[in-house]
Length: 147
Image (cartoon, rainbow, N blue to C red; front, side, top):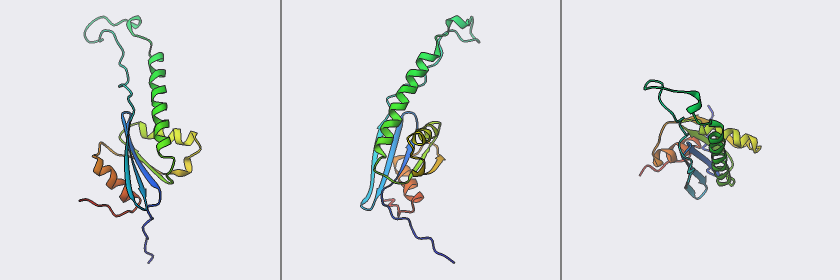
């Protein structure tokens, strides 16, 4: 029977991400560091106009989505680039979060030829800061301090 040895905490990181915030937990031989990056991206804009349930609703009353969608995509791309820059000093990466942002970050990492760094992409719901740190430590088999 072989015994699995813990992977040393040498420059691995986990990032919990959604469209509003990324929490990066970096693991090094000296311990962990946590960094928060806020996106400052507004919620995806809703269409204007009357509700079909409450009255008249004409297609001409609906503002064009293209311009707003391009603006949102540009802001998110800048946000993902900031997250990727913050992850530059780390080796293997655990990417997790509740929605589409984790997949979008994964795609952006692949576009930057960093696919080999991605250890896993997982779906997780909202988590506290301590839960995020504990998950990253558990994934990379580092003793977690729950004090």
